[in-house]
Length: 434
Image (cartoon, rainbow, N blue to C red; front, side, top):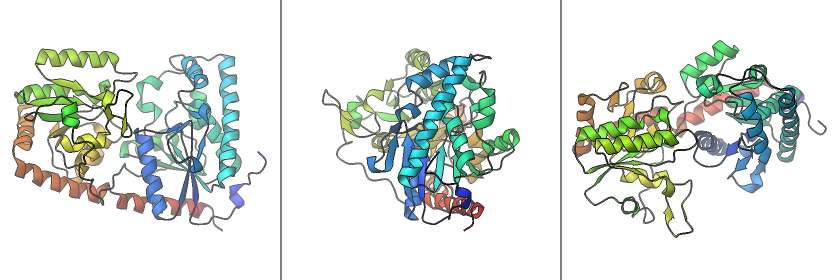
């Protein structure tokens, strides 16, 4: 492409102009949240961040929005409907994948040129093939320009059942992720690091998800003072919060079982997020299970959003961070997580939590020394008794929450992210000496 030089011969200068690329940077999904944290920490070292995606809620002067890059764009949905769950693809599908990739590659060249970018960070877009043409476009861009690049991997396609059968294995091998030597890889857990090395024979750096534990959360303000009332909770009710989407891998039936085993009608289970495209049947099952168990289950998803706002009916929309301070306990009985942001958020707000010993928690998080009730796929009476003690013994609860906050501050803070990003930037710089 004209106007873009080969970065093998370009001068590497700090601070850098860094371009983040994904299908979406908007809302509270893990990719959007973690990329914003990276940008914030990089800004503290005087780097500038710019954004490319199909949907964006970043500042317009630093953004480059290409609707076709969104995984929900009609053309990409048409392609996905013809490549997953099938073992052969039609020539038209191949042509449309490459036609879209050519267009997206041209927009990526324009993104780099418009903002004079020196480093690109690909957020999960070379990891999970929700948008195959974009992955192909990025892989070709790297090969053609040798621009210093980082692939930040959140969850790989081989971790998801929905991508186990498809007819694009050639493209997955090429681009998800690319083996290009110009690409630095970052993963969020040890299992992903090992599996990436085994499948793709490429090294990676481990940078876990983080929160700003150096800055305690703000005190609840007047806006969220009525959130319990809006949930329909009485003054004596105790809120147990399930701060996740309603999908089967979240194991929400265990949260219902917990409330049932606590055996007190003052405990109310509140689920914060929507069912989504995976969970309508699961949601209905949860409602029926709660009814049979005599558990007061409340879905508050219509009143929780990415930002505070007011509906057309004049009702407040709250953020998840408005709700955490009002919770007495967080349930996190997930069967699988790539990392576990809700775990860190509960620790950050000093709310006790129950965790299922999912694989990443067991391997990466638990050895750090957190103290909390943990179930092994099923609830035992001893785990329920520990939860009850946390709910009823204020001094014991404070002791554990203060301990957990200190542990998280050592391992999952912005200070740790800053240290690892500086190392990553040094690695990138060393590949392109002046």
